[in-house]
Length: 128
Image 1 (cartoon, rainbow, N blue to C red):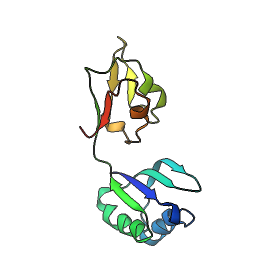
Image 2 (image 1 turned 45 degrees about the vertical axis):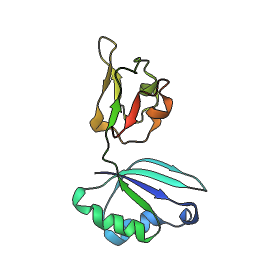
Image 3 (image 1 turned 180 degrees about the horizontal axis):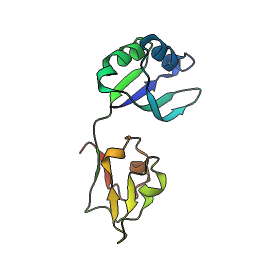
């Protein structure tokens, strides 16, 4: 299961992730991380059966945890197949087929939102 872990400003200097992993013994696969001195946001993968335990450990330390279960949606009427999404997607969700038509592999999506920001026609959305 893909999850989003947000670490607020007042907690950014605490070892929230490592303490939670040590406490629970649960490994998480960090897929994307954006952390600086003011805020932290991670996209991670954790086994479904272990989610509640790691969520409780993270939240008890001040993190905000959400399940990422809304697939990416492409409005085919609005999409001009420019490929802007291909260039920014860290997970290679988008590609061109042999006819230069845009292909979307929703299963690879980690819902980071990079493609949504880049799309010049606002043809991409989460959870619709």
